[in-house]
Length: 267
Image 1 (tube, rainbow, N blue to C red):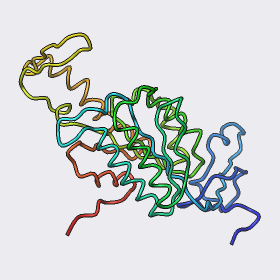
Image 2 (image 1 turned 90 degrees about the vertical axis):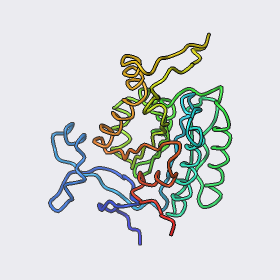
Image 3 (image 1 turned 180 degrees about the vertical axis):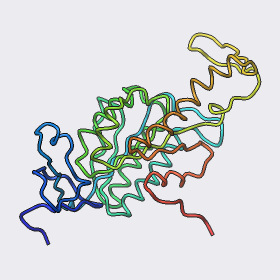
Image 4 (image 1 turned 60 degrees about the vertical axis):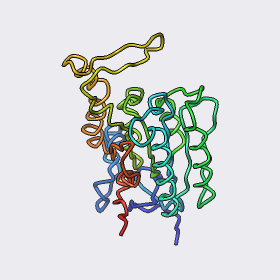
C-alpha cells in the first residue's frame, strides 16, 4: 500500500523522490553526498516505489559497427543483442524504449510487453540495415538518454569502442549515479588480432596495402582497435558500469551478463 511519505528503502523498481536531513536509523548507503557537501549537514536520499522501470536501449549507429569478418557484421550482432535484452526487460515487467545518435529521429517511446519490444525491434531493423546518413554519434545519444531516464531506470548501451571517446567520464558518472548502466562492446576478431600478412584497405581515396607482419603497423593496429576495448573493460566497471565485449561470432545470449543474468544454456 502507498502512503503519503516516500519509502527510504531502495530496491529494484525504486525511484529517487527527494533528500532530507539525515536522522538516526537512516541507511548510510543512501547519503546524498553532493547535498551534504553543499549544505554542510548530512542529508539522505528518499526513494519511492516505481510501478514500472524504464529500460532504455542506446544503439551506436556510427560507421564503425557496419563491419565484420566472422559470422556477421557488428551491426547485426548489435541488433540481435538489443533484441535479446529488450525481451529480457519486458519479461521483468519493464517498459522498453530505444534511441540512437540522431537529431532528426525521435526515440522509440516507452511501452510495456510485446508491443514495446516489437517497436524496439522494428527500429533496430531500420537502424542496422545500413549506415544512417544522419548519425551524429554516441555522445548525442548518451546526452539524450540522460535527459530521458528517471532515477532508478536502466540504461543498456551497444557500441563500438571507437565511439566511446565521444562520451565524457562525467557523463558516465552521472548516469551510473542514478541508474543501472550496462555496456556491450561490439568486437571483431580481425580488429583484436590482425593476421600476419599484407592486407588491402581503402582510405577513402585509393587502395593501400598495410603490412601487418611488421611490428610497427601491428602495434598501431592494436592501439587503434584492441586497446580501447581493453581500457573500457578495465576502467568502466570501476565507475559502476557493467561492461562486456561481444564478438561478432559469439553466442548473442552472452549480452545478458550486463543485466546480471547468466545466459541460458541449451540442454
